[in-house]
Image 1 (spheres, helix red, strand yellow):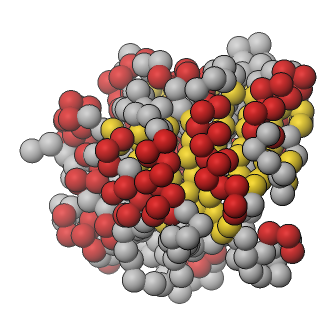
Image 2: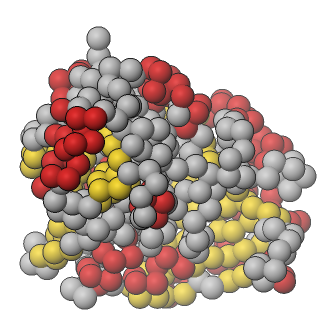
Image 3: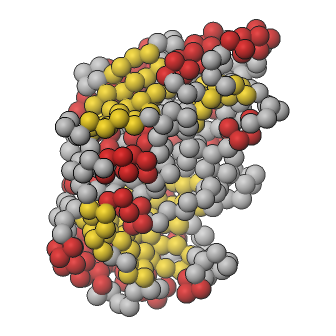
Length: 467
């Protein structure tokens, strides 16, 4: 992505003859452009664009990662990392891509209620492994998302209002820094809190140790309402969120289903509001809590039920197939009736915006300050509004749904870097700074200068080294 590379020119992107000569010494598989397997290795869930590195290192072990980072530093090459490719934000053009998808080890310590997960573990695999011990991770809505990338972004999960961010439950981080050193970070280490909430800015994580929660079932699902009920559904949900206990985490989405054969006939071409609920409690109490939502009107879909936690991905039913997408977001101090009206004006049924609008209720345990100065600001926000667009692959990059952010500006306290998807060409220092308070960014920038002074890890929502 042009502007990121131009702003961070300390490292080259050209692959030298000396670097080429060293490739046969790698224990891990390596791929160069034109090699069989290169295209498959760089492919990810995001299809709007992809990395195009000079070399891919297909890491199988932590030592492979360490060797790849040391190699990159020696030859002054920048480094990108990819497990599943869901969170690809700024694509590498040249340099080294470390593919961690093969690092899928999971070790559960049931007595300590912890899991050690490798860098390539997907959420669904961790959910299944933890369930065998009567435990669950603080996962998000999609089972195919990489656990490490999700947690490094903070990890806003299905039961976040009761248990907080997933990053708040990290016990240890295994990290390779720009000097090629393998470090094990624990609370108290200065990089521990910096790494959690800042994506991959400080190195390549090879494994995480995570706390698990004693949850085996959840009450939840979707209530979906047709176009005429959308404004009423949003207002009822808004009022309802002020009354529910912290054990309830919910979202509401506005979206237009395409008129295509893959969509069930009742939904084709329809603009709907979908309320998604996750409740850590009994089905009886869940039914009582959602009664005001059912009173909105006749639902096009109602699958609220008690379910094994292993089925929790059905609450949001995120797309399972790779596709192109971009997103922006706004974290709001409150969601007032006026904010709903402003949102409907730019993104409602008659707007023609063509974006999926997702509003997530925050608060509860998400407001509790994390340990060790985790890089997660704006915990006071009551809601986050995401606007997700579906650009055509190869289309001219534009800032997604800027009209939504503008409409919500009076209530906005900041934005979440974890929910900025794609649109890497409009990424930059100002955008990253807006994801943190000024003192947090200054601290992170100082640490970046100490641990990655040449900005080797820059294919992300980049924190610039302090000057």
